[in-house]
Image (tube, rainbow, N blue to C red):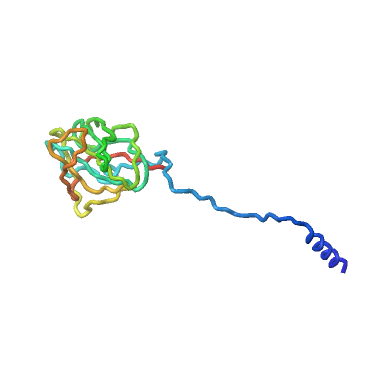
Length: 196
């Protein structure tokens, strides 16, 4: 009975106090999907890591040859290169604006995969780019894809189509190009580093 009287007294006392009781709340942290812009992921070479050696080498092509690609995540292009013979000029363009983003001379790879450093270029997921190597009339190579026709996904990169233009070696975007989805002519390539 004593316990009941104490409880009633406490309830009576509390009824006169205008107080609020703070209850704990739990809020989830919302992390919006934005690019970190750090380019600290694992480097990827879409062709160099996946194609192996060329089907044919030693072609005297006077073309710019390469491929159009679309990153699936934000990141950076840190190197341009390829599989050919003799030093070649490699270029990277943003297709929508036809803007030249990078240009570098790739040292003679002697028909193996070789890449040259560039100032890192930020690329955006869903945006299309073109990597091209000017063959300069010698040292061209190609890879036949067989049933693995383009587009194909290599790591975080979709290679949309192989593209080339004859008698072309310019910093201006090669807008009128031939395309194929069963050969990689010139075997140009990039090093892509995704954001972490």
